[in-house]
Image (cartoon, rainbow, N blue to C red; front, side, top):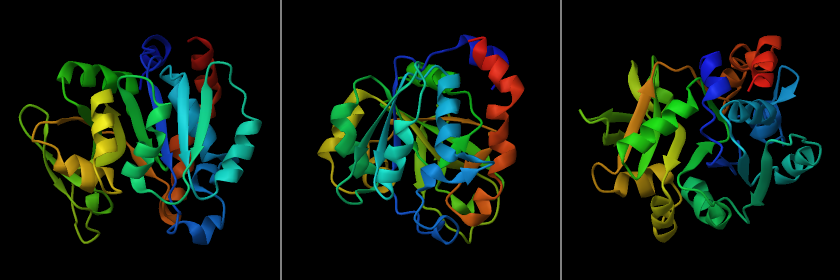
Amino acid sequence: MSPTSSRLDRDLGPVDVLVLAGGLGTRIRPVLGDTPKLLAPIGGRPFLSYLLRWLTKFGARRVVLALGHGAAAVQEYLLDFRDPALAVAAVVEPRPLGTAGAVRFSRSRLHTDPVLVMNGDSFVTADLCAFLAFHRAAGASGTMLCAKAEQAGRYGRITIDENAHIRQFVEKDIAFQGRAIVNTGLYLLSSALLDTIVAMPGPSLERDVFEQLPAGSLAAFGGAFDLLDIGTPETLATAVPLLAPLFSPIAAETEGAR
């Protein structure tokens, strides 16, 4: 992301953002205890503060948090959140619904076309304005943000055809060694596709929805992005160098020039 794009390309303004944060956080519980991943402390700040700062850099104006485990703590944090440029709402799942279930549960709160849907434990050093521009030009029902990972076993892998559409999904396999194109957990989904998700069964966006769509339904926007998943103690420990620049003096100066 260049300073120029963060100042000028404020394309996320008319796009609702849905953050999927209803998971139990089982893998990270030895470190966080009952603290939800959104509030994981990183360099003295909760992860959610970084996430919201990152989204506003691309002009986001409305975020919906789909909460589950630890929802009360997140809602308490939001009581003190103050940003006149960003509206943040929360919905609380009655039980763990999975990623697709969370989208269904939140559908009535999403008003734009498209909607940016993202996992609440991920961060990618991608230009979200360029991501949106690509989605609009691709003409697909949805677009997945992808990255080239050196060690891809922790992620779901994909293959892409010559038209930048997704050809095949491959389940995550921790035994896999090597480089691959991976799903970062960020999606731009059309209003029509959101309605399709509501009508489909199953808890998983990837397995129960995306893999069941007709060929060519989803486009892929990729690049050599840094990808952070704070879902394990090991990856959480690597978060500070990647996220700290969001609150650096240079970042604050850039934000003020928007």
